[in-house]
Amino acid sequence: MLLYIHGFNSSPRSEKAMQTALYLQQHYPQVDFQQPQLPSSPKAAMMLLCNITEQAKQQGQVLRFIGSSLGGYFASYLAETYGGRAVLINPAVKPFELFEEFIGPQYNPYTNEHYQVLPQHQDDVALYNTHVIRHPDRFLVLLQTGDEVLDYRQALHKYHSCELHLEPDGDHSFVGYEQQLDKICKFIQL
Image (cartoon, rainbow, N blue to C red; front, top):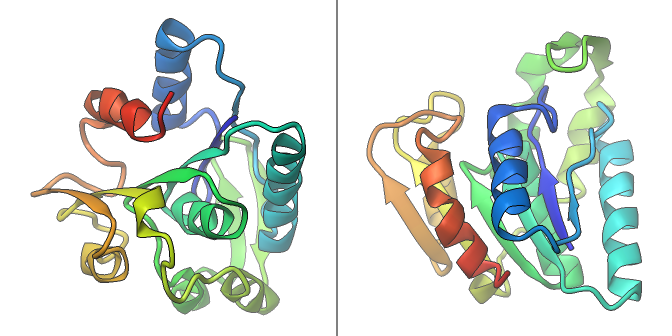
């Protein structure tokens, strides 16, 4: 199973998610690829991701994750908790520290959903923090120094023992992501 986990206010219809789905259809059509739309509540999102992961594990499937931004934060938790390999794209490292600026009304342009980020969501997200990466061999981390949303140096520090791919410039979306898909699939051993 390969689980693609989108970021905050994103969707399986984001450019990276769609590029990933198309690449897998063309090169690895046999892979059980899942990319759910996450609920806006962090607890509900993680419950969905854990349920998908636990079901795949019970079926004896190899666990693989690709997570972007907040999805990378969630993918870290899943790979450390359940096993498997994870590719993180400009991952959030301490999203709970950023939540205050998002508290209040939010709009997801992909789903057309209007919702509220509540103070409780900050604490909920913190529950899934992997303080230390105990299994660095499970992670490939793709970073661009031009990320305008997250400080790439936090990820560089947290994932320093993992396989890192650091590019100058770029942005939070990870410019040229589609050119990394072959490397990603080799790392997660498709």
